[in-house]
Length: 387
Image 1 (cartoon, rainbow, N blue to C red):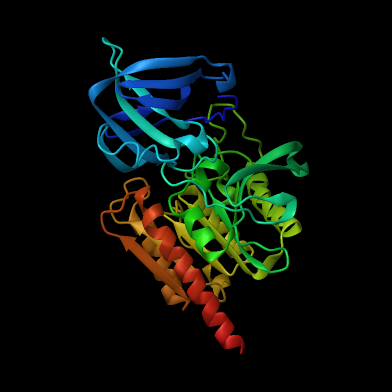
Image 2 (cartoon, rainbow, N blue to C red):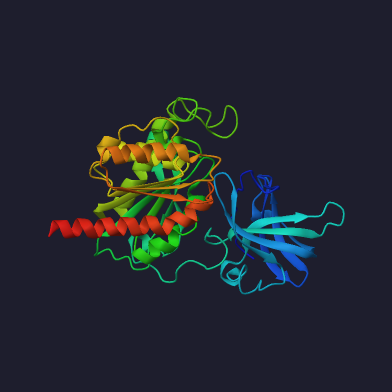
């Protein structure tokens, strides 16, 4: 294993399990009751780590999922012996490893739990790999999610990251829809690009997708942060990376990434969309209403917009699709309902999907196909009206 991709795993807890930022693991092989893996301690590169082998307990379960801003959303589970080669580790040969978490028993040292988060090559949730084929776009972009950088002059950062996906059907001779996707609090572009259903539907419908950082993981994209202010207390640790103009820089990063995409690809100016989850949902409301002339549609998912709805009258020509779970305890549905009620009052074209039993993370996968369907339907409607 010559090349490794480090994945910083933030601290989240679900059903008693914890994912800590103390280390990351790349699982390279499972053979019978043995698992081989590379473990990197905090701050260590996987390339510098040593390969380790541990015994797997007989009753271990494999959990397959993805990182969300507040939780690990499990999408499959089952005994290790049940179809492991054909399901959870289907892409192991192509990816040369799976990023995950191994939990050893304190006394015996046996591995008692395996959580698979993503393949090491593409950052996608384990399972089916990225679509085959390559788009012949700027820079020979392949049809899989990748991380790019640009020179963020306003922030004096020459390598600001953003996620990018170019569909396999992309052609520089044809205008292509673009979707800007905003991650939630504590997230990053790679995690957002790994959102369940995002890349699959972008490939299906032929969308380019870009996921900005928003300056840092908690910049709020210029939207009001909880407790007032814009992005106060961001940067993870006390006294961390939180400049006084964080909200401004976070918003500017989004607009810069949009500009980068328009420079590199043949973007359909009439089909630029903005979506976001949680904090990113709040950013979608903020940036969507601030620059309504840009967007062909908005889709806030479990939006963490806790104040009264503002500036919605600016969206008279912008269709909106809102996704919310009625069992969301992180961002309760009352907030989304207020915004939806105001849109109804203003006669804004919109649809509201409230997922029964949906929590803060699971609504992403439930809502994503519906979001693309909504945008496609609105585009068809626009084309019909233009004739």
